[in-house]
Structures are given as structure tokens and as C-alpha cells.
Image 1: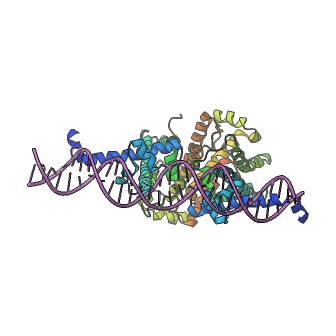
Image 2 (image 1 turned 45 degrees about the horizontal axis):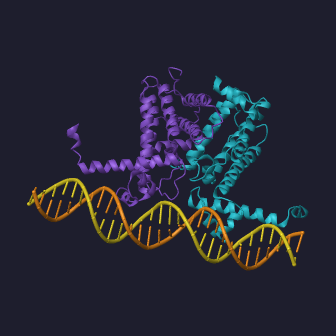
Image 3 (image 1 turned 45 degrees about the vertical axis):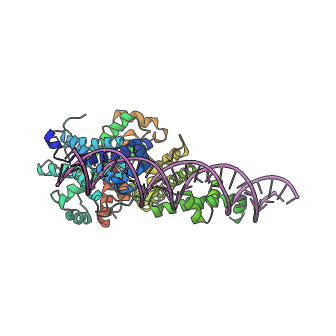
Length: 241
Length: 241
DNA sequence: CAGTTGAGTAACGTGGCTTAACTAACTACA
DNA sequence: TGTAGTTAGTTAAGCCACGTTACTCAACTG
């Protein structure tokens, strides 16, 4: 391990550390202000630096934002995957429940990052076209798709509740290589499940469910997710929490 | 009608007209920039006025935003209600479908206004506590609730797919006076339906479904809404579109 | 004619983005 | 070990833009 450190030149390590610190600081500022804006000046001040120094690491405000967006996707995807994989392979319903809960809790914990990736673009930000953000997004989403692929391959995926697959959607789904191993019917069901999960998550993360008591909100969420599972043909979770 | 105009003093009419123009201009600027920010300076410039003049109408940036948020809720609620009521009373499934489609299309048409009410708060904006925005929100939402109440009273509301109502949610739902005439089971189902609708709408409005062809997206949406209806115990639409 | 309202001008203050020029420290190599 | 090159960082400065207030003028109302 000590040997591995010297693999990477000292300077380069310091540099990446600084980059990480900048991003972390920007996120902290967003958390404080409750927005998706982080001023260069403030970041520098908090870090005990001067604003121009940041330009050594990010050519542009947009470049920082792009990095943050990619990180957010990766973090969300990783969190969902980890939570999903903490449930045994044979309990597919439980794995879906865990993944969904992770999605939800991540958004609650980090509403700014959630807004960063799933909300309106930040004022003044223009996304790099065909860019790495899109890739990061599909990487994160494939964590959900993996669950359905898994279910399909082990034969545990039942028929979806909506079975009259729309022809237009069939054509479209077949165009996506990475999902080609899931039957269209189930792929469509997955999209429904995702939308359903996403909707609850948005409402809660942006404070539109404050009038529902916390325990009731938990219950409502579980019901929403179970409903989505049932509709998608996923088996019920092994243990009821 | 001509007599009615003189009911309201000339000055007051001019004043409200200006207020409307300010709000409309702000919205146009938001549409142009694709954000939820509208600078006072820009509004004034577009209107052929000077910035300070706006302070005659809005004491504050926040005051303008508050007005815009309330307008957005009202507009959304009105749009949904109109679309819903354009379908015959006896076709409850069709009414739900129409309402949902209106919700979706409104968000597509006005992503900025949609973000204004359902996204992160605008940078620097602090909502007036216990304020009129909350009232406007529940007014808009009651347009959906009305549909379920209607269905319940005419006896056309079947059992929801999820029937083991969570006890915590029961207590909470009973606390809401305005929904007290809908059985808890169905109220919960309504929340599920709303979340599902909202999720799809958010994803589409914020460009996360661009990879799905337009016709396929329409199909996907209709399936999502039909699924939600089935789960909530609403009858199927009379005519299949 | 007196009072009220709308609007403009000028000005203040602030604050942030960004570039340019310079300094200090570190790295590597002879 | 000394020296040349590179990198991180600072200071200074320019620039622009926005929000907001105070003051003044014009127009309308009654």
C-alpha cells in the first residue's frame, strides 16, 4: 500500500486531492444555501484560497458543474447498487425495495445534487453536447436495469400488469443495445416503476409531502414501491419490513 | 360589459395590466434563458421601462417570484380541471386520462413554471411562511382529489390494488379535512397515482426521456397513466385513444 | 388647483468573474 | 548539490452587472 502510493507522483496526488476538495466544498456551499449555485469566490474563501487559484483546476464554472453532475450520477448509481446488493440474490423483491429506498434516501440526503441531475439546468450552465454527463446518467440508470435483467435471466420475472406493449415503444426499446436482453414488456414495466419511484422521490425531496407525517410517508413510499413491483412483475420481498 | 369596465377605476385597471405584463415578461425571459431566474433589469428593458419603475409594483424580487409561483399553481390547476371537465361525467377513466395528460403537457409546455413550483427553490428566494403559495398548491392539487371524490360518490371507484392501508397513513389522511370524504384506501391510491404521473412528467419535462422517440413516449405515458388508474381502482377510459 | 400616482435619472454599493503579471515552492536532472 | 523548469498560488486590476434608494418631473384625477 505504501509502495502503491509512490506509483502516482506526489504532485499529481496533491492535485487530485485539491480537485476533490473543491468539489466537496462546492457541495457543502450548495447544502448551506439550499441551491445548486456555488460561487467561485465562496469556494475559494472557505478553502483559504483566492478565487483565481481555482482556475488552475477548472477552466470554467461550467467545467466544475459538469464534474459535479458526473459525480452525482456516479454517487447515486453506486449507492443504489450497494444497497441493492446488500440483499441476497434470491430475494429479488427485496433487492428492488432496497434499491428504491436508496434512491429515495439519497435524494432526501442530497436534494441539491438530486436537483443538479434531475432538475432544470443551473442558470448559465450549458451542458457539453453528447457529453460525459449523458454517459454518467445511463451508467447510473443501468443499475436499475441490471436488476430487471437479473430477474429475467433467473426466470423470476413474472408478466407485467400492463401487457399490451405499445408498438412504438417496442421499436424504441429494441434500439437500445444495453437493454436488449430484457423483453420489451418488462423493459416498459421497468420504466413505469422508475417513473413511479422518481415521482415520489421528487415530491418528497422538494418538500411537497411535508404535510404527511414522517412514519406515514415511509409507509406511503413502501406501498408505492410494492405497487410498482407488483405492476412490473417482480416477486414480493421475502421479508416484510 | 362596457358598464362593467367602468366599475373598476381607470387607474386600477392600468395598474393590474402592468402587473400582468411584468409577470408575463418575466415568464418570457425565463423561457428564453431556460431557467427560473428573471432579472429585474431585463424585465424592465424588455418592457421599455427602467428598473426602478418595477418597484412600484413589486417591493422585492421575492414578491414577484411569489406571485409567479401562485400564478403557476393556479394555471396548472385550471388547465388540469378544464381538460378533465372536457370529458363526460360518466367516463371517469377518460377524465383521469385527460387530467393526467394536461398535467404532463403543461409541464412540457412550461418547464420553467413547472420547475418553479416543483423544483428546488430559486437561489435567494425565501418562501413566505405559512403563506399563500402553500394554499395555491393545495388548491391545484384538489383538482385531482375532486376526481377521486367524484368517483367515490358515484360509486364508480373500485377497490385499489394495494388494500393493506398503512395505519400511519390512515391517521394522517384523516387529519386532512378536505379529503375526509374519500376513503383512506382510495386516498392512498390517489397519492400513488399522482406520484407516478408526477415522476413521468418530471423526467420528460427535464429531458431525461429524450432517448425515447416522441410517439413511443406518448405510448409510454398512456400506459403509465392506465396502469396508475388500474392500481387506483378507477374504471378504464371509455374510448381508447 | 391640489393631491396622487407613474415613471425617469442619477447614484451608491456590492459583488462576482476573469485575466495578467508576479512570487514562492517544489521537482528533476546534471 | 545546485540549477533550470514547472506548478500552485497570490496580488492587482478591469470589467460588468444587478439590486436598490433618493430625488425629481410629468401626467392624470377629482
